[in-house]
Length: 480
Image (cartoon, rainbow, N blue to C red; front, side, top):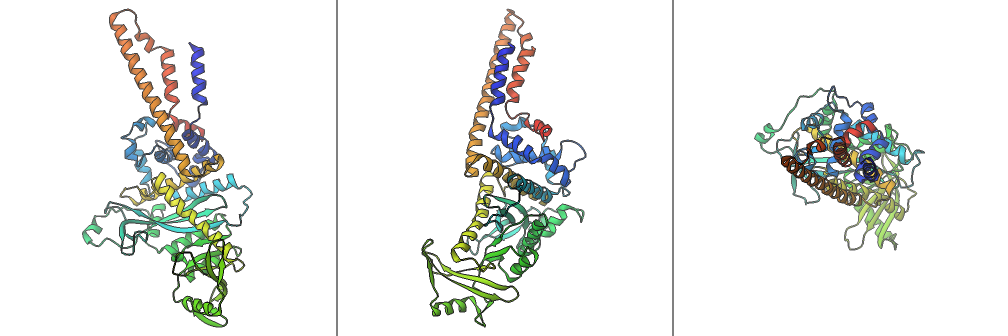
Protein backbone atom coordinates (compact mmCIF):
# COMPACT_ATOMS: atom_id res chain seq x y z
CA UNK A 1 0.00 0.00 0.00
CA UNK A 2 2.99 2.35 0.54
CA UNK A 3 3.85 2.63 -3.16
CA UNK A 4 0.51 4.10 -4.32
CA UNK A 5 0.54 6.42 -1.34
CA UNK A 6 3.88 7.79 -2.47
CA UNK A 7 2.46 8.42 -5.96
CA UNK A 8 -0.48 10.32 -4.48
CA UNK A 9 1.92 12.27 -2.30
CA UNK A 10 4.01 13.24 -5.33
CA UNK A 11 0.97 14.54 -7.22
CA UNK A 12 -0.30 16.58 -4.29
CA UNK A 13 3.07 18.06 -3.43
CA UNK A 14 3.93 19.06 -7.01
CA UNK A 15 0.56 20.76 -7.61
CA UNK A 16 1.46 24.40 -7.01
CA UNK A 17 -1.48 26.68 -6.25
CA UNK A 18 -0.95 30.37 -6.85
CA UNK A 19 -2.42 31.16 -3.43
CA UNK A 20 0.21 28.94 -1.84
CA UNK A 21 2.89 30.64 -3.91
CA UNK A 22 1.77 34.04 -2.69
CA UNK A 23 1.58 32.97 0.94
CA UNK A 24 4.78 30.96 1.07
CA UNK A 25 7.12 31.96 -1.70
CA UNK A 26 6.50 35.71 -1.84
CA UNK A 27 6.25 36.25 1.92
CA UNK A 28 9.24 34.01 2.46
CA UNK A 29 11.17 36.03 -0.13
CA UNK A 30 10.26 39.25 1.70
CA UNK A 31 11.17 37.67 5.08
CA UNK A 32 7.95 38.93 6.63
CA UNK A 33 8.55 37.35 10.02
CA UNK A 34 11.99 38.94 10.30
CA UNK A 35 10.66 42.33 9.21
CA UNK A 36 7.92 42.18 11.87
CA UNK A 37 10.52 41.56 14.54
CA UNK A 38 12.85 44.28 13.23
CA UNK A 39 10.23 47.04 13.29
CA UNK A 40 8.91 46.10 16.74
CA UNK A 41 5.85 43.86 16.34
CA UNK A 42 6.01 42.01 19.64
CA UNK A 43 3.51 39.84 21.52
CA UNK A 44 4.02 38.43 24.98
CA UNK A 45 2.31 35.11 24.29
CA UNK A 46 0.03 33.24 21.92
CA UNK A 47 0.30 33.40 18.14
CA UNK A 48 3.10 35.50 16.70
CA UNK A 49 2.34 38.85 15.07
CA UNK A 50 3.52 37.57 11.67
CA UNK A 51 1.04 34.66 11.85
CA UNK A 52 -1.87 36.98 12.65
CA UNK A 53 -0.87 39.54 9.99
CA UNK A 54 -0.59 36.77 7.42
CA UNK A 55 -4.07 35.51 8.23
CA UNK A 56 -5.50 39.04 7.92
CA UNK A 57 -3.82 39.48 4.53
CA UNK A 58 -5.09 36.12 3.28
CA UNK A 59 -8.76 37.10 3.81
CA UNK A 60 -9.17 39.01 0.51
CA UNK A 61 -7.53 36.09 -1.32
CA UNK A 62 -10.27 33.91 0.14
CA UNK A 63 -12.80 36.47 -1.15
CA UNK A 64 -13.80 37.30 2.44
CA UNK A 65 -14.67 40.84 3.54
CA UNK A 66 -13.85 40.64 7.24
CA UNK A 67 -12.49 38.58 10.13
CA UNK A 68 -16.04 37.79 11.18
CA UNK A 69 -16.79 36.45 7.69
CA UNK A 70 -13.87 34.01 8.04
CA UNK A 71 -15.36 32.41 11.14
CA UNK A 72 -18.73 32.00 9.43
CA UNK A 73 -17.29 30.54 6.23
CA UNK A 74 -16.13 27.13 5.10
CA UNK A 75 -12.55 28.36 5.62
CA UNK A 76 -13.07 28.25 9.38
CA UNK A 77 -10.67 25.31 9.66
CA UNK A 78 -7.82 27.25 8.04
CA UNK A 79 -6.46 27.96 11.52
CA UNK A 80 -7.11 27.15 15.14
CA UNK A 81 -6.59 30.84 15.95
CA UNK A 82 -9.53 32.53 17.67
CA UNK A 83 -10.82 35.82 16.32
CA UNK A 84 -10.06 37.59 19.60
CA UNK A 85 -6.35 37.14 18.84
CA UNK A 86 -6.82 39.01 15.57
CA UNK A 87 -8.91 41.79 17.11
CA UNK A 88 -6.39 42.32 19.91
CA UNK A 89 -3.59 42.86 17.42
CA UNK A 90 -5.63 45.20 15.22
CA UNK A 91 -6.77 47.27 18.23
CA UNK A 92 -3.28 47.52 19.76
CA UNK A 93 -2.06 51.13 19.52
CA UNK A 94 1.58 50.07 20.01
CA UNK A 95 1.82 48.18 16.72
CA UNK A 96 4.18 50.06 14.30
CA UNK A 97 2.20 49.58 11.08
CA UNK A 98 3.92 52.50 9.31
CA UNK A 99 7.38 51.08 9.97
CA UNK A 100 6.32 47.68 8.66
CA UNK A 101 4.88 49.15 5.45
CA UNK A 102 8.06 51.13 4.77
CA UNK A 103 10.22 48.08 5.56
CA UNK A 104 8.27 45.91 3.09
CA UNK A 105 8.47 48.67 0.44
CA UNK A 106 12.25 48.79 0.95
CA UNK A 107 12.43 45.04 0.54
CA UNK A 108 10.43 45.29 -2.67
CA UNK A 109 12.88 47.88 -4.02
CA UNK A 110 15.82 45.68 -3.05
CA UNK A 111 14.32 42.68 -4.85
CA UNK A 112 13.34 44.39 -8.11
CA UNK A 113 15.96 47.17 -8.28
CA UNK A 114 19.00 46.31 -6.15
CA UNK A 115 21.16 48.88 -8.01
CA UNK A 116 18.63 51.62 -7.10
CA UNK A 117 18.58 52.96 -10.65
CA UNK A 118 16.19 55.86 -11.31
CA UNK A 119 13.87 55.57 -14.30
CA UNK A 120 13.32 58.74 -16.30
CA UNK A 121 9.64 58.80 -15.37
CA UNK A 122 10.00 57.63 -11.74
CA UNK A 123 7.79 59.67 -9.44
CA UNK A 124 6.41 60.11 -5.96
CA UNK A 125 2.63 60.38 -6.29
CA UNK A 126 0.40 61.89 -3.62
CA UNK A 127 -3.38 61.70 -3.70
CA UNK A 128 -6.39 61.01 -1.50
CA UNK A 129 -9.43 58.79 -1.77
CA UNK A 130 -12.73 58.52 0.07
CA UNK A 131 -13.32 55.69 2.53
CA UNK A 132 -17.05 55.67 3.21
CA UNK A 133 -18.27 54.14 6.48
CA UNK A 134 -21.71 53.33 7.90
CA UNK A 135 -21.18 53.59 11.66
CA UNK A 136 -21.48 56.97 13.39
CA UNK A 137 -19.74 55.57 16.49
CA UNK A 138 -16.44 54.92 14.72
CA UNK A 139 -13.64 56.85 16.42
CA UNK A 140 -12.92 60.21 14.72
CA UNK A 141 -15.47 59.56 11.96
CA UNK A 142 -16.59 62.71 10.13
CA UNK A 143 -18.50 64.01 7.14
CA UNK A 144 -16.14 64.08 4.17
CA UNK A 145 -16.56 65.68 0.78
CA UNK A 146 -16.68 63.30 -2.16
CA UNK A 147 -15.61 65.35 -5.19
CA UNK A 148 -16.48 62.46 -7.53
CA UNK A 149 -20.13 62.42 -6.49
CA UNK A 150 -20.68 66.18 -6.82
CA UNK A 151 -20.10 69.53 -5.16
CA UNK A 152 -22.73 69.16 -2.43
CA UNK A 153 -22.19 65.50 -1.64
CA UNK A 154 -20.80 64.56 1.77
CA UNK A 155 -20.41 61.07 3.17
CA UNK A 156 -19.66 59.53 6.53
CA UNK A 157 -16.08 58.29 6.53
CA UNK A 158 -12.40 59.18 6.29
CA UNK A 159 -10.14 60.70 3.66
CA UNK A 160 -7.24 58.34 2.99
CA UNK A 161 -4.15 60.31 1.94
CA UNK A 162 -1.60 58.01 0.30
CA UNK A 163 1.96 58.48 -0.90
CA UNK A 164 3.23 55.99 -3.45
CA UNK A 165 6.27 55.49 -5.66
CA UNK A 166 6.23 54.64 -9.37
CA UNK A 167 9.62 53.14 -10.24
CA UNK A 168 9.11 53.08 -14.01
CA UNK A 169 7.24 49.75 -14.01
CA UNK A 170 5.16 49.38 -10.85
CA UNK A 171 3.36 51.54 -8.32
CA UNK A 172 3.89 50.68 -4.66
CA UNK A 173 2.31 52.44 -1.63
CA UNK A 174 4.84 53.83 0.85
CA UNK A 175 2.77 55.63 3.47
CA UNK A 176 -0.73 56.86 4.28
CA UNK A 177 -2.77 58.79 6.83
CA UNK A 178 -6.50 58.90 7.58
CA UNK A 179 -8.05 62.37 7.91
CA UNK A 180 -11.27 63.76 9.34
CA UNK A 181 -13.05 66.76 7.84
CA UNK A 182 -16.39 68.13 9.10
CA UNK A 183 -17.48 66.82 12.53
CA UNK A 184 -20.90 65.23 12.92
CA UNK A 185 -23.63 67.87 13.20
CA UNK A 186 -25.50 66.54 16.21
CA UNK A 187 -23.80 66.76 19.62
CA UNK A 188 -25.50 63.49 20.62
CA UNK A 189 -23.81 61.67 17.76
CA UNK A 190 -20.43 63.16 18.62
CA UNK A 191 -20.77 62.00 22.24
CA UNK A 192 -21.63 58.47 21.10
CA UNK A 193 -18.38 58.13 19.17
CA UNK A 194 -15.89 55.56 20.42
CA UNK A 195 -13.00 56.88 22.54
CA UNK A 196 -9.90 55.15 23.80
CA UNK A 197 -7.04 56.21 26.05
CA UNK A 198 -3.61 55.86 24.42
CA UNK A 199 -0.07 56.50 25.53
CA UNK A 200 0.99 59.85 24.10
CA UNK A 201 4.10 58.31 22.52
CA UNK A 202 2.38 55.27 21.04
CA UNK A 203 2.08 54.72 17.29
CA UNK A 204 -1.71 54.95 17.59
CA UNK A 205 -1.55 58.35 19.33
CA UNK A 206 0.65 59.71 16.53
CA UNK A 207 -1.89 58.51 13.96
CA UNK A 208 -4.69 60.25 15.86
CA UNK A 209 -2.76 63.52 15.79
CA UNK A 210 -2.28 63.12 12.02
CA UNK A 211 -6.01 62.67 11.61
CA UNK A 212 -6.62 66.30 12.56
CA UNK A 213 -3.93 68.08 10.51
CA UNK A 214 -4.46 69.36 6.97
CA UNK A 215 -3.66 67.00 4.10
CA UNK A 216 -0.97 69.19 2.56
CA UNK A 217 1.04 69.15 5.80
CA UNK A 218 0.43 65.42 6.13
CA UNK A 219 1.55 64.81 2.55
CA UNK A 220 4.74 66.81 3.01
CA UNK A 221 5.55 64.88 6.21
CA UNK A 222 5.13 61.58 4.36
CA UNK A 223 7.32 62.74 1.48
CA UNK A 224 10.09 63.86 3.85
CA UNK A 225 9.86 60.52 5.66
CA UNK A 226 10.16 58.57 2.39
CA UNK A 227 13.23 60.57 1.34
CA UNK A 228 14.76 60.03 4.78
CA UNK A 229 14.35 56.26 4.30
CA UNK A 230 16.26 56.38 1.03
CA UNK A 231 13.48 56.41 -1.57
CA UNK A 232 14.26 58.52 -4.63
CA UNK A 233 12.43 59.65 -7.77
CA UNK A 234 12.80 62.16 -10.58
CA UNK A 235 9.45 63.88 -10.01
CA UNK A 236 6.68 64.56 -7.50
CA UNK A 237 3.24 64.40 -9.14
CA UNK A 238 0.12 65.91 -7.55
CA UNK A 239 -3.19 67.29 -8.74
CA UNK A 240 -4.33 70.89 -8.35
CA UNK A 241 -5.56 70.35 -4.78
CA UNK A 242 -1.98 70.00 -3.49
CA UNK A 243 -0.36 72.56 -5.79
CA UNK A 244 -0.08 75.43 -3.32
CA UNK A 245 2.97 77.64 -3.42
CA UNK A 246 4.01 76.41 0.04
CA UNK A 247 3.82 72.78 -1.10
CA UNK A 248 5.99 73.36 -4.20
CA UNK A 249 8.49 75.44 -2.24
CA UNK A 250 8.78 72.88 0.59
CA UNK A 251 9.30 70.00 -1.85
CA UNK A 252 12.02 71.88 -3.69
CA UNK A 253 13.79 72.78 -0.43
CA UNK A 254 13.54 69.41 1.31
CA UNK A 255 14.10 67.10 -1.66
CA UNK A 256 17.26 66.63 -3.74
CA UNK A 257 17.66 69.43 -6.31
CA UNK A 258 17.35 66.92 -9.13
CA UNK A 259 13.74 66.12 -8.11
CA UNK A 260 11.10 68.33 -9.70
CA UNK A 261 7.40 68.98 -9.17
CA UNK A 262 4.78 68.58 -11.90
CA UNK A 263 1.25 69.48 -10.90
CA UNK A 264 -2.08 70.74 -12.04
CA UNK A 265 -2.68 74.40 -11.11
CA UNK A 266 -5.88 76.28 -10.41
CA UNK A 267 -6.39 79.45 -12.39
CA UNK A 268 -6.62 81.51 -9.20
CA UNK A 269 -5.21 84.85 -8.07
CA UNK A 270 -1.59 83.77 -7.64
CA UNK A 271 0.77 85.86 -9.76
CA UNK A 272 3.66 85.02 -12.08
CA UNK A 273 6.20 87.43 -13.57
CA UNK A 274 6.15 87.52 -17.39
CA UNK A 275 8.36 90.02 -19.22
CA UNK A 276 8.69 91.99 -15.98
CA UNK A 277 4.91 92.19 -15.45
CA UNK A 278 3.06 90.39 -12.63
CA UNK A 279 0.06 88.50 -14.04
CA UNK A 280 -2.38 85.92 -12.72
CA UNK A 281 -3.30 82.84 -14.77
CA UNK A 282 -6.28 84.36 -16.58
CA UNK A 283 -4.38 87.52 -17.47
CA UNK A 284 -1.43 85.46 -18.66
CA UNK A 285 -3.62 83.27 -20.89
CA UNK A 286 -5.19 86.38 -22.43
CA UNK A 287 -1.74 87.87 -23.09
CA UNK A 288 -0.46 84.68 -24.74
CA UNK A 289 -3.53 84.53 -26.97
CA UNK A 290 -2.96 88.12 -28.09
CA UNK A 291 0.69 87.35 -28.85
CA UNK A 292 -0.41 84.43 -31.04
CA UNK A 293 1.81 81.84 -29.33
CA UNK A 294 -0.67 78.98 -29.52
CA UNK A 295 0.76 75.59 -30.56
CA UNK A 296 -0.78 72.26 -31.50
CA UNK A 297 0.20 68.75 -30.41
CA UNK A 298 -0.92 66.36 -33.13
CA UNK A 299 -0.20 63.26 -31.07
CA UNK A 300 -2.67 64.32 -28.39
CA UNK A 301 -4.83 66.51 -30.63
CA UNK A 302 -4.38 69.32 -28.12
CA UNK A 303 -3.95 73.08 -28.41
CA UNK A 304 -1.53 74.56 -25.91
CA UNK A 305 0.68 77.44 -24.78
CA UNK A 306 3.96 76.92 -22.93
CA UNK A 307 6.00 79.65 -21.32
CA UNK A 308 8.80 79.97 -18.76
CA UNK A 309 7.82 82.29 -15.91
CA UNK A 310 9.25 83.52 -12.62
CA UNK A 311 7.25 82.29 -9.63
CA UNK A 312 8.11 84.49 -6.65
CA UNK A 313 9.91 82.56 -3.94
CA UNK A 314 10.40 79.49 -6.13
CA UNK A 315 12.24 80.74 -9.21
CA UNK A 316 11.77 79.83 -12.85
CA UNK A 317 8.93 77.45 -13.64
CA UNK A 318 7.27 76.40 -16.86
CA UNK A 319 3.51 76.85 -17.29
CA UNK A 320 1.45 74.89 -19.79
CA UNK A 321 -2.04 76.03 -20.79
CA UNK A 322 -3.77 73.25 -22.72
CA UNK A 323 -7.19 72.66 -24.16
CA UNK A 324 -8.04 69.00 -24.67
CA UNK A 325 -10.44 67.78 -27.38
CA UNK A 326 -14.13 68.37 -26.63
CA UNK A 327 -13.33 70.61 -23.64
CA UNK A 328 -14.15 74.30 -23.44
CA UNK A 329 -11.95 75.20 -20.48
CA UNK A 330 -8.20 75.65 -20.63
CA UNK A 331 -6.31 73.60 -18.05
CA UNK A 332 -3.09 74.77 -16.45
CA UNK A 333 -0.06 72.69 -15.46
CA UNK A 334 3.19 73.69 -13.80
CA UNK A 335 6.63 72.09 -13.93
CA UNK A 336 9.72 73.18 -12.03
CA UNK A 337 11.71 71.35 -14.73
CA UNK A 338 11.77 74.05 -17.42
CA UNK A 339 13.47 71.76 -19.96
CA UNK A 340 10.33 69.64 -20.49
CA UNK A 341 8.32 70.08 -23.67
CA UNK A 342 4.54 69.95 -23.47
CA UNK A 343 4.42 66.36 -24.75
CA UNK A 344 7.15 65.18 -22.35
CA UNK A 345 5.40 66.86 -19.43
CA UNK A 346 2.07 65.21 -20.28
CA UNK A 347 3.67 61.76 -20.62
CA UNK A 348 5.25 62.09 -17.19
CA UNK A 349 2.13 63.57 -15.58
CA UNK A 350 0.11 60.65 -16.99
CA UNK A 351 2.03 58.44 -14.54
CA UNK A 352 -0.11 60.02 -11.80
CA UNK A 353 -2.98 57.87 -13.05
CA UNK A 354 -1.26 54.80 -11.55
CA UNK A 355 -2.39 55.85 -8.06
CA UNK A 356 -6.00 56.00 -9.29
CA UNK A 357 -5.60 52.46 -10.64
CA UNK A 358 -4.12 51.47 -7.28
CA UNK A 359 -7.13 52.82 -5.36
CA UNK A 360 -9.53 51.06 -7.72
CA UNK A 361 -7.76 47.70 -7.48
CA UNK A 362 -7.29 47.94 -3.71
CA UNK A 363 -10.99 48.67 -3.18
CA UNK A 364 -12.20 46.10 -5.70
CA UNK A 365 -9.91 43.20 -4.84
CA UNK A 366 -8.38 43.86 -1.41
CA UNK A 367 -11.49 45.27 0.33
CA UNK A 368 -9.84 48.60 1.12
CA UNK A 369 -12.17 50.80 3.16
CA UNK A 370 -14.53 48.01 4.24
CA UNK A 371 -13.39 47.89 7.89
CA UNK A 372 -16.26 48.92 10.20
CA UNK A 373 -14.40 48.62 13.51
CA UNK A 374 -15.03 51.48 15.96
CA UNK A 375 -11.36 51.54 17.00
CA UNK A 376 -9.21 53.93 14.96
CA UNK A 377 -6.20 51.64 15.47
CA UNK A 378 -8.11 48.84 13.72
CA UNK A 379 -8.82 51.18 10.81
CA UNK A 380 -5.07 51.85 10.48
CA UNK A 381 -4.32 48.12 10.70
CA UNK A 382 -6.87 47.35 7.98
CA UNK A 383 -5.42 49.85 5.50
CA UNK A 384 -1.87 48.75 6.33
CA UNK A 385 -2.56 45.07 5.66
CA UNK A 386 -4.30 45.97 2.38
CA UNK A 387 -1.22 47.93 1.28
CA UNK A 388 1.16 45.17 2.38
CA UNK A 389 -0.80 42.59 0.42
CA UNK A 390 -0.85 44.90 -2.60
CA UNK A 391 2.97 45.09 -2.56
CA UNK A 392 3.21 41.29 -2.38
CA UNK A 393 0.76 40.93 -5.26
CA UNK A 394 2.61 43.54 -7.33
CA UNK A 395 5.82 41.57 -6.83
CA UNK A 396 4.03 38.32 -7.70
CA UNK A 397 2.51 39.94 -10.78
CA UNK A 398 5.85 41.44 -11.81
CA UNK A 399 7.80 38.18 -11.73
CA UNK A 400 4.96 36.21 -13.34
CA UNK A 401 4.07 38.72 -16.09
CA UNK A 402 0.44 39.27 -15.14
CA UNK A 403 -1.04 42.41 -16.69
CA UNK A 404 -3.26 43.32 -13.74
CA UNK A 405 -4.33 42.23 -10.27
CA UNK A 406 -7.60 41.19 -11.85
CA UNK A 407 -5.78 38.44 -13.71
CA UNK A 408 -4.13 37.25 -10.51
CA UNK A 409 -7.47 37.18 -8.69
CA UNK A 410 -9.22 35.28 -11.48
CA UNK A 411 -6.58 32.58 -11.17
CA UNK A 412 -6.87 32.55 -7.37
CA UNK A 413 -10.66 32.36 -7.55
CA UNK A 414 -10.59 29.39 -9.93
CA UNK A 415 -8.14 27.51 -7.73
CA UNK A 416 -10.13 28.26 -4.56
CA UNK A 417 -13.14 26.70 -6.26
CA UNK A 418 -10.99 23.70 -7.15
CA UNK A 419 -9.81 23.37 -3.56
CA UNK A 420 -13.32 23.68 -2.15
CA UNK A 421 -14.56 21.03 -4.56
CA UNK A 422 -11.71 18.68 -3.62
CA UNK A 423 -12.39 19.16 0.09
CA UNK A 424 -16.08 18.41 -0.40
CA UNK A 425 -15.21 15.28 -2.38
CA UNK A 426 -12.97 14.13 0.44
CA UNK A 427 -15.73 14.73 3.01
CA UNK A 428 -18.13 12.67 0.89
CA UNK A 429 -15.50 9.96 0.52
CA UNK A 430 -14.93 9.98 4.28
CA UNK A 431 -18.68 9.74 4.96
CA UNK A 432 -19.03 6.87 2.49
CA UNK A 433 -16.23 4.98 4.16
CA UNK A 434 -17.87 5.59 7.52
CA UNK A 435 -21.14 4.07 6.32
CA UNK A 436 -19.36 1.02 4.88
CA UNK A 437 -17.25 0.58 7.99
CA UNK A 438 -20.21 0.79 10.37
CA UNK A 439 -22.32 -1.54 8.20
CA UNK A 440 -19.67 -4.22 7.97
CA UNK A 441 -18.86 -3.86 11.65
CA UNK A 442 -22.50 -4.27 12.70
CA UNK A 443 -22.89 -7.47 10.67
CA UNK A 444 -19.81 -8.92 12.24
CA UNK A 445 -18.15 -10.01 9.02
CA UNK A 446 -14.88 -8.28 9.87
CA UNK A 447 -13.61 -5.87 12.50
CA UNK A 448 -13.20 -3.10 9.98
CA UNK A 449 -12.99 -0.46 12.74
CA UNK A 450 -9.40 -1.47 13.13
CA UNK A 451 -8.85 -0.36 9.54
CA UNK A 452 -10.12 3.16 10.29
CA UNK A 453 -7.62 3.46 13.15
CA UNK A 454 -4.83 1.99 11.08
CA UNK A 455 -1.69 3.89 10.15
CA UNK A 456 -2.52 3.68 6.43
CA UNK A 457 -5.99 5.20 6.76
CA UNK A 458 -4.79 8.03 9.00
CA UNK A 459 -1.84 8.68 6.69
CA UNK A 460 -4.03 9.05 3.59
CA UNK A 461 -6.46 11.34 5.43
CA UNK A 462 -3.66 13.53 6.75
CA UNK A 463 -2.09 13.68 3.29
CA UNK A 464 -5.28 14.99 1.69
CA UNK A 465 -5.87 17.51 4.45
CA UNK A 466 -2.35 18.90 4.28
CA UNK A 467 -2.60 19.29 0.51
CA UNK A 468 -5.20 22.01 0.98
CA UNK A 469 -5.13 25.22 2.99
CA UNK A 470 -5.89 23.77 6.41
CA UNK A 471 -2.53 23.95 8.14
CA UNK A 472 -0.53 26.21 5.85
CA UNK A 473 -0.35 29.14 8.24
CA UNK A 474 1.53 27.00 10.74
CA UNK A 475 3.92 25.90 7.99
CA UNK A 476 4.42 29.53 7.01
CA UNK A 477 5.54 30.34 10.54
CA UNK A 478 8.36 27.81 10.16
CA UNK A 479 9.21 28.89 6.62
CA UNK A 480 9.71 32.63 7.30
